[in-house]
Amino acid sequence: MPDSPPALGREWLLTEQDLAATVSELRAGGLVGLPTETVYGLAADAANEAAVSKIFALKGRPADHPLIVHIAAPEHLQLWASALPSAAWELAERFWPGPLTMILHKHPRVSTLVTGGQQTIGLRIPAHPMALQVLHAFGGGLAAPSANRFGHVSPTTAQHVRDEFGAGLPRVLDGGACQVGLESTILDLTQTPPRVLRPGMLDLQAVRALLPGLQFGAIARSPRVSGALASHYAPRTPAELVASEQLQARAAELQAEGMQVQILGLDAEVRSAKHYATQLYRTLRALDQAGGDRILIEMPPEDGAWLAVWDRLQRAVANTRQG
Ligand code: TXA
Ligand code: MG
Image (tube, rainbow, N blue to C red; front, side, top):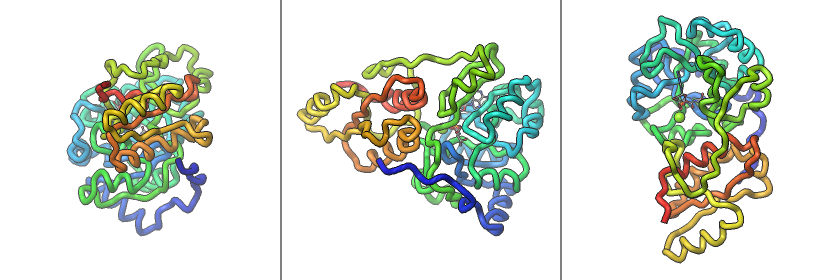
């Protein structure tokens, strides 16, 4: 895998002209491919139902799947959510802008089209200079799911977004390679105690310091069992999670059946979860393009730092029937 992208700075800002064109596109109810620090989003005016409908249509996403609304500043929380617990303000202060999505009770004026029919809403401030620039200039909230077709791997470069939608999405803003690389951590604050619905690269120990009762699922180490996991974030090529010591034998077994096998190993450079996360989706896309019959993914450590990586890997292999 290649090295991490360099830290993002002011070079990732739009020119005045591109910013104005982007904002008019959004005000007119159009869709824009938007970089964030986690993955690229498919953004539309969250207050415009026709615009929000276009997101579902382009992604091929079922209408009962709620969207995350991206906002420019913590004060905007009260425009989108109601009955805000004090923890929401504390989390916003501590972790925003950043890879944290909070689920809160929605404000009565928010359309249930955005929330997938639910009375709750997901909100976040992304930590990417270009996303913040667009959000501030636009002023309102931007509904943005990951900019991929439903069930496919999330995009971490502008080119990935173009590969997903082609001419169906003319405006894709290029903000470089995503610095986090996996989707945000989703915390449900409408439940007592609060619960992690989707692990991300946010440090859960730091969250626990603010929310001592925080609940989250354990890592289920089930290499060859797809179980009930939804096949989300999946490459098109069937994939398996294999323990390091079984990798060579499993590859040989599949090759003997005539399969072309690709291995996603834990090289010395990717032994940090943070670095591995930045590379995972682009590596899965590259392996897909290379066109083998089976991807063997070497199991990462069972350390808590790898929780989000484990979650995505288990989903990536959930569809593969084991032979
Ligand atoms: O990092 C991210 O979160 C990226 C970037 C673009 O911000 N967005 C993203 O969106 O991953 P999406 O739509 O691909 O995933 C959002 C997840 C979905 O699994 C959805 O079910 C959940 O958030 N979600 C959104 N609103 C929710 C709600 N009100 N209650 C429960 N889950 C919700
Ligand atoms: Mg997604």
